[in-house]
Image 1 (cartoon, rainbow, N blue to C red):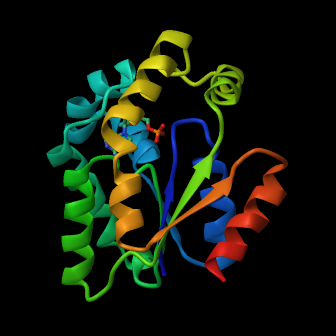
Image 2 (cartoon, helix red, strand yellow):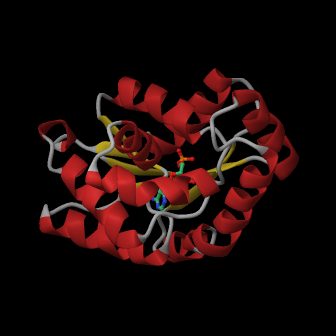
Length: 182
Ligand code: AMP
């Protein structure tokens, strides 16, 4: 099963992806985590991505493709995966479709977690990651609205999209998502 966890920064994609991957026994790919690891290890991809991640801008699609292809060729992805933070642009959605088609598979479901902006900003300020400063958070939200949110219509037109209320206790949100995937 291939599931895309969709939504603005701070809606809880990462938290939910870890729980779902465990419950469903499938892999979890967070492109954000992959970039942070690459930056920490100063790999070539990390050096290319650093300025964008620090500023809260999108890493260019060709660099994203490199990290995703590498991850998805790993053995643990054979039984499926939860994609967290990818795709974020139409070009990435097309690349994902092609990558999966080459493996004879496709996205099964896109779950859009819905949380209002004020709650998002409060959550992220509490989390306190390096890119969780208010001006960078606001930039990430506007990048999401401009470049990523249009994918909602794309996946809705494909009949793959379900929206889920992302407000509430972590376990309650997980149950809502699992109900969609049953
Ligand atoms: P995240 O952990 O998903 O909040 O991502 C943190 C940062 O990593 C983002 O603000 C982007 O700079 C970068 N990033 C993560 N995933 C992507 C992606 N699919 N496309 C472009 N940039 C990404």
